[in-house]
Image (cartoon, rainbow, N blue to C red; front, top):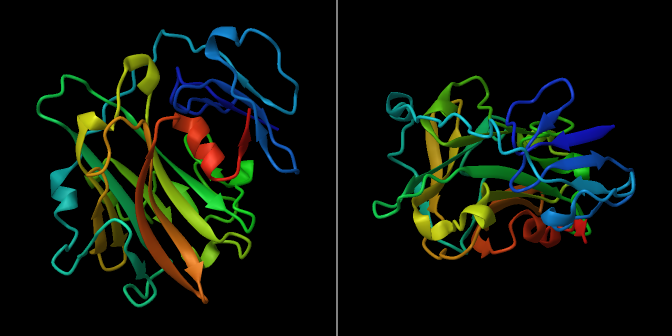
Length: 272
């Protein structure tokens, strides 16, 4: 099976054509450890082997995505009175904070700085990381693969609570459905076409990672993740990981300048 990601078209069609970051990808999923070949975009007319990812220049036409508008009324339905403010590097146990670990939602939001004349597009992806700090291709959740195999992670969903419309991005979580071989979930954000447009996270402000119990509509914790970012084009915002039979969260906020390739390298997807 081939997963095709076309950065010129954000809608998934019958050929599963979509886009991620800077790349047009033609990928054949293998049972072995994934290997991704990220070739120089200027030279992508050359063929690559069927067990690799083909990186091609995208079509400049019709690549404008509809800007999402956050619904303030929906966001106001979330009770933030008891939300815990988390700092970078803090690790918090989730099982005691929320008994409803099957009804969680990660909400992400951000703003453009007042002095910025840029209108950036940010993409969220989740790496489901196994024992050897590797992520299989089917466990990489992003625009072309919105849902994990067993349904524990679903991008752009919110347990039918409609709360996703109050934020820039939402990730539905059911931690009871995460396979035992998965040790952690890494939540990352990248800037679309960052290199081509000379854009970085210095143009972003008020970027927040929020964990919400969709059953009670209470915000469990919040973390402002842009304070340490400047020239980066990708960031590992936080990791939710197993520890002694429970789930904990580690607020990371580590930025990268290598975009998708840097993130793949960081979470064990081999790249050339």
